[in-house]
Image (cartoon, rainbow, N blue to C red):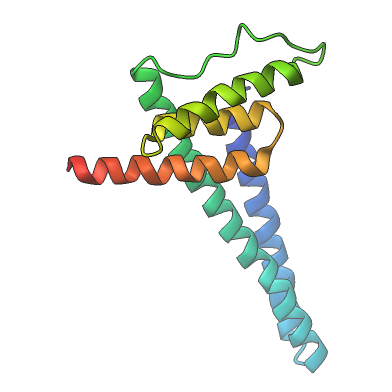
Length: 152
């Protein structure tokens, strides 16, 4: 199953869950008691927060997908197929670190290029540092958006 289909399926399941949670919140409001209303307000915050998380996650995913398509059209998608792998399929740590150092050098040489930031984010990802991968990808998205706005 494609990753996008899995994401759509999980999002649909989450929407159903959030709807049911909101229904429970309104049932608590209908009790009319102070405790029921307070609990209902607390429970209602969960679906609101959930919707926000889903929207932000999908927006970020679509932005990363747009950058990936652009790099693919340019023939510049990062390729790590030649790096050695562990039995689990993950890239060997030493190879990932060496590949990362090369991407970091590219960013230091051209800090305004979203393409090198994208590759650095990918390097963080294969090295297992997801938090920095997300932060770096945000930088790539910002730089690409600035480049598009200058082109228009």
